[in-house]
Image 1 (cartoon, helix red, strand yellow):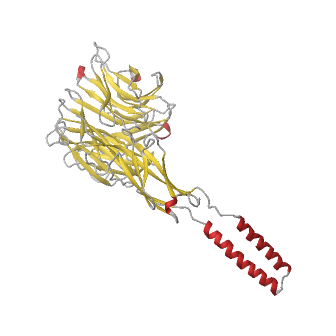
Image 2 (cartoon, helix red, strand yellow):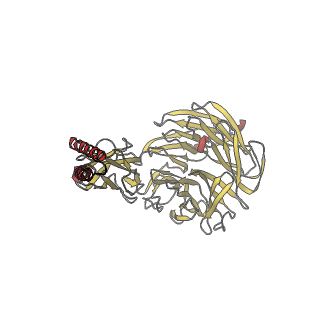
Image 3 (cartoon, one colour):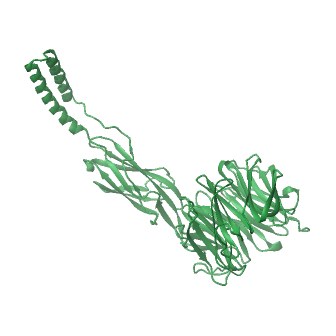
Length: 564
């Protein structure tokens, strides 16, 4: 069952005043008649100068000047005409349509002679014929119709030109945001138990869901791509003799996908290995391999593709070490680094390509964590950690995150020179512990400089932040599970915070009482907030019918967290 997809157009700047840019200078007439007057002035001035002090020379000069000023003044008044001005009113953030009108108000001494032209910075989003001008005089209208199944940002340039006096041209720009909207929920999966682990989106707005279905030897790693209509473009199921559990995937802007799994490649052994798979934007497989990270039994956790095509994968080993491995785009091993030598509570959680192409590896552990430079870090109970590596494998930074109580670091995101960390805590990182475990978000302006930390949750519940995303305007979005009874009575929560101070903007919960509903990840794409999770109950009035716990995708309005 798929949700109905419509279109959403938004303007980043509801009102643009003008003139914004004046691209042509004023034209001052210089006619033959005006040239005659200049000759007269010159002659008269010469006469006056040669007969200085005489009344007749003075009178002559005065008379001549008076006549000349009158003549030149009349020509100048006729020639000096300011360029036209333009004021553009684009749709506000509440406008929802694929086709929309932009109001244009023009001011000029001869407004009927002013032409209006509109161009776009993105000919795919707004192809030829999609921008139609109508109206005359001061009030014009531009009807813009975006291409079907396209999302993105385009700058529309409105140019007004006075064709009668040729006095100049004025332009004004507005940024238009085009994206999908969906109502409700898309369910996907099989008759078995479905466990979505991560969700991502490319620059065209396609959505990628990764995880697994089934348990034990019957487990299948599953990756699926959805188009703007919410329909499945392609899906793959990855098997292994004794099961293949899909973990997280990473998506590039142009639609390449990397998927990390843990599998049992031998039918005669329970030994596990890390699986790595990549696909091109058309869904054609490129890399498919399994290996032992650190030379021992290992479990893949997450994989990403860098701008140069290199692939990075994060794994946990049977020895409780966290391993980071770099491959070429074809799957050739380039280097491997031990991020942490840990203990029984150590886990690897996520991997992100950050600013400057640095690789951020996240996880948590207890006791003494030895980093890649063999420096020991003593934790307070369970603490989160992040390690930052250069593309050549050099360790640049390693930091612990947390305090008294157990702290689990799950996600990192970047915005405007700062970075944001999210996870779960059973301690007090903010003002008080609300549930038995709370979600937390922390903003840092530098590696070791904390700007603010916020935690929240539900009384009596176990909560966490499994997903983290940044909006175009800096709003911080998290999702996760608020569990009254773990595994049987839980809801997915969607929470928004202001990036400036961490103040909570809203928090929404979805799921039926007494039913299992969990949030696993979210992504911000094209002004939509898209949440992934699993449930065995109704969502938005729709009952899943695939069997077991079904995976879902929620299309959410980021302004208030309501399901579209």
